[in-house]
Image (tube, rainbow, N blue to C red; front, side, top):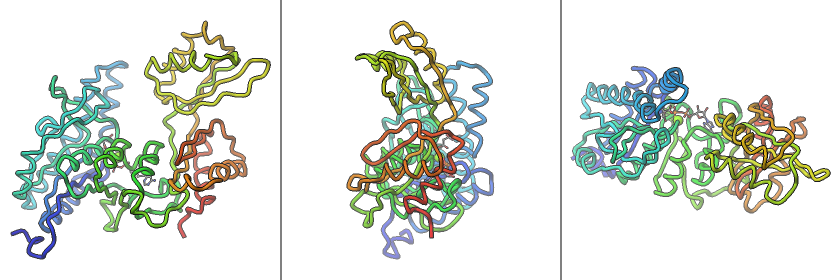
Length: 416
Ligand code: ADP
Ligand code: ASP
Ligand code: MG
């Protein structure tokens, strides 16, 4: 009988995911294996998901970029998924050397079945029968994150950058695990990126909804899709440090949070660029003339503002993903005849800053405080967008740090 049962503790099935810095070299993989062994020795059933060693995926992406400006996305996936294969094998080896029964399970071997959207595939199904059978006997499967396979074509896919978080949550859901632990290089989810705002506070708990907004608005600590999945499948998810043995942050339902702050976090993203179409007629159909062709080209427009018109002419400013800037300009130029603009310009030196909190639903004044705080620092707001639980502004990227710190203080988020 496992020791946990003897002690009267329930056996818990846990998925433990380790990010790039946590498996960055052999010493760190040893540290990971020790953590896993501890949980196994306590009698728990453990499945491990690993990222590539930090920096490796970037290097692999660079190899692809250097090989060809337009490459076959299926071959891209073959290349960039390779980093995780290495760490999965090494982690399994390390566990074995510590006397833990372990083996690696590549995405196609389980299989982790995904859609065929190479580079940004979605997990559709994970077949868990064999894993569950082995885990019940004390074996630890070590699964490379980020990768899957298309059932029809048998080709390898990847899940988009940061996708190992999603692998872990999806595996936890499929295994009906009691918990999914996401180990990283910070001790949890903070009120703002702790690498920029040193006064950021670690949150003991955050709601799925707020975490989803934080992630989609730029907080890279969890991949957005992993949070959406955790919310949908009710996966109890914890973000914690691989290096410090302290409690992390639990992502929970709203009811579990006793004292709700109005603003619980601030995020930033430099993933977008600004486009301005100037001197256009302020007439019905002008927005459709601009945004229709962009949508047809599958370009995701985020923030939009139209200026007050003067003498029937107006400007339209909006943001597109930074990597799509040239394609966006080409699409607009291609519509010159129907849009009939005077000039077209773009600016990649912008940052989107967002304040997030479910408490905003019942409190007024969050947006005005944001605008006032930025005004006091002399920071010009270029575009604004809001939703039920967030306010976002677009500003010049040179003010990122100043704005984040000022807002963090203004909303009373600074650590004591
Ligand atoms: P991993 O390689 O473990 O997946 P990531 O680099 O993807 O780690 O995510 C962890 C990083 O997320 C942290 O180092 C931190 O700089 C960044 N981050 C951004 N916003 C936040 C936040 N609100 N709380 C914690 N970390 C954040
Ligand atoms: N290695 C992949 C990346 O860097 C996936 C991950 O680490 O989550 O994007
Ligand atoms: Mg990550």
